[in-house]
Amino acid sequence: MSQPLWQKSNIKIDARIMQFLAGDDVLLDREFFLHDITASKAHVEGLANIGVVSADEASALKRELDALTEDFRAGAFVLDERYEDGHSAIEARLTERLGDAGRRVHTGRSRNDQILVATRLWLKEQLAALEQHCKAIASVCLERAAQPAIPLPGYTHLQRAVVSSTAMWFAGFAEGFIDNALRAKQTALLIDANPLGTAAGYGVNLKLDREHTTQALGFARMQVSPIYAQLSRGKFEMAVLEAIAGALLDLRRLAWDLSLFTTAEFDFVKLPSEYTTGSSIMPNKRNPDVVELLRASYASVAAARTEIEQLLSLPSGYQRDLQFSKGSLFHGCRHGLAALELVPDLLARMAWNEPAMRAAIEPAMYATDVAIEQAAAGVPFRDAYRAAADAAASAGEGRTPEGSLAARVSPGSGNDLRLDELRARLSRLDG
Image (tube, rainbow, N blue to C red):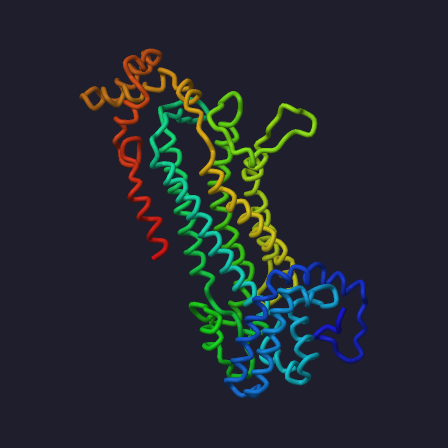
């Protein structure tokens, strides 16, 4: 490992302790490294604006930071155990290439605000991806909801309840994922604040050009208080994981439906073959493994959020405990977004088994229609309810699923799905 940035004279370093302190940090920093370089360029520009580095030094530093970006992308520079972390690697590279100019790059900043700003830039990317995945899912659901509706049993308590349809099923998940996309956008507004220049949490005795770095890095605003910049670490990460988890809660229910609908007992849905796997011992099996792992994905994101929450039992100011939040954040975001990315194609290509769905609609499922019709004719609803219950077995006489759906005129239901309204909501997210 290269000499730590904090190395001082007459301080002995124990390799075992250093390994414990570093952990997987330098490997995780690969995910944030390019953002750290981008923020370093903005910091250099800010230092030049206040005369801490010369124009020539700033030009050289930015040139070498661009070269490091290209080398990292090409694999010519590898972030590995030679370095304590990504921040150390950047400074070591600049010092190696530029001498004293490289040693000046850390003026006015701390590794605390370095990781804050790199992570914040990365989080903005994750939320943008979340929004796009949710909009893609909602779009596919709206497209399929607009196709001719196929009658589908509607369930409560996992028992057959009323006549529903494939259009209603898709419309329900469309609206859910429109809301999830909106939540991603709103969470992005929350975290769109620049912490660079807050140093270790108490500012520095330099008039740093924080307005410049805020604009250069594309942040909506400056995170003003250095103390709050530290207090927000973990809080903002949890907000992002909560936004992803909210989408995965809807995905968990969708996956549960598909898990049931693909069983031989239901036989409502056939999945694309790519989304199934075989058994290692039973030649006859095709298993809905992808759907099951989509269903399980919420657990990984929820666990990541919980781990970060448990780290936050801390006083104000930076504490080293927060280093452990990086792995949770990375793994939670990566897993959650990877799951959501698979969903649009799955929904676009899954096939309904209409005969099996029609066969599952039984006469008693029209009893609610009967009771509502009687109530609309003037019979007190509770009397109509009891009469319909007593005659539930014959409630379907003369009725069809299409007739039940056509009569369902309450806003958002069978004959009034309001798909145009949902499309408009989805479209407004791009405004």
